[in-house]
Length: 128
Image (tube, rainbow, N blue to C red; front, side, top):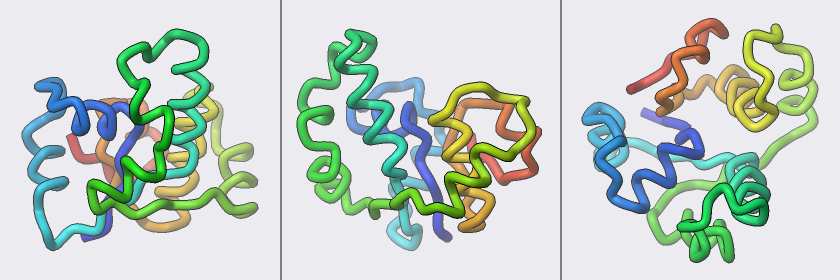
């Protein structure tokens, strides 16, 4: 299975945080799964770290690509198709980072590991 980690799922995985659900953890540790991390997550982490909203994310904020690769995860770039859909999806959710993840999950047919129940309103498969 191919899966997309929401930013908080990535951060909780890296930190060993117990907030990561058992199904999400199982999906990440399953060697049969291809785990994707969006460029939008790197963007979100960099911005929130700079603003002081993620003070514990200094290491990952310094080189998100290296941290993602070190976990064996796959970078998912943002494309024009992703961006257009992110701007066009219904406004159930205002967060631009999450809207990009929703667009990417839709276009790439990826279930998302996310605590965000509002994702369900977009018809994507969410694992939590």
